[in-house]
Image (cartoon, rainbow over all chains, first blue to last red; front, side, top):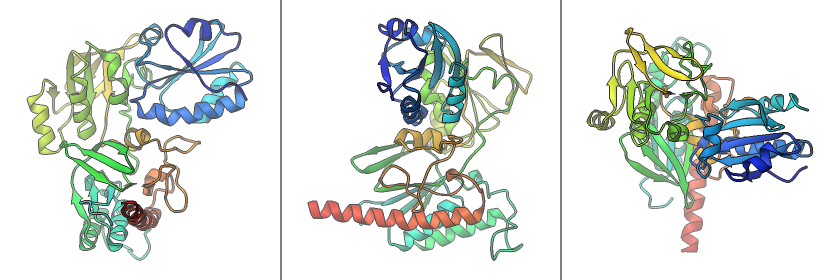
Length: 108
Length: 308
């Protein structure tokens, strides 16, 4: 069990995500997005299981316009796996938990 | 029950919704059923394996009979799709495609499962790179750009109108709009450019969406394409209310044996709760949901009355 899902924004993205000492799974979301609400509990569940070795974070695109643009995000939820500041893989849309676990297996 | 005009809302008028309407109505709840019969999977089906109905009727006839039956129990039918669902102060608020807003104590989701993919070249490749299935979620990423919405029904028409607030030009690609007269009027008066009697053949681009090839051999330069087929479904309407989806496929709404979802007052029945996609299962779940929802509405009204 880790620290819960971390909220990040444009100003903290570099220090918290790109320079993190662990891999990070970031959920790009917004409050008006239904599928984002559906996937939020899944992120919490994954954090409870894998929170010791992976950082789980979420970035509200409504408050942070620059980061989504940098990663060419055109749909939410988009979930990106970062390691050493680089994108390992990403998924778009509300996907089942097993699908995200497959993603995590790439670095575990 | 309370003095409200209606207590129980049912979205979807397939077998689950109709059976729910019959049972809620028989419990004296004031019921309204939203949706269009042609959107039920049963509409074009021939019924072969439903108990006690061997070779008796077609799906279409069955839906019509169910409607008359539900009406005899007091249910009211409104042939409109719901384009928005929200909850406030223990009530559910539904907005129809024509813009009407209704308030209910309880809501039964019975709108089934529908195909949401276009199944054309370029669609899968460009998901998240210009292809979107959710106007509400993704319109903001297309500010000042040219976009197309694909679909014949309420989700596409309402989506195109919503995109006008963000995009520079909005095209609606459709075979024929199948929407309420009021929504059609709004669409025609708007700046949405309607491309009718055509469909998408291919979504083209290098790294992201750059345009569409249409079946009438015209091409359209757009940066985004919103695929909005049919009426809004579970993910579009119910996710906003905070319902939990099944962990395995993330496509169906989780319910218990009372057809309750994780949200108090919100029920789901029929194909929307998962397989088997059979009339028998749909009417069984609809029956339970109808009874439980009427009971919930009664208890809610009683407790509010006793509190004054």
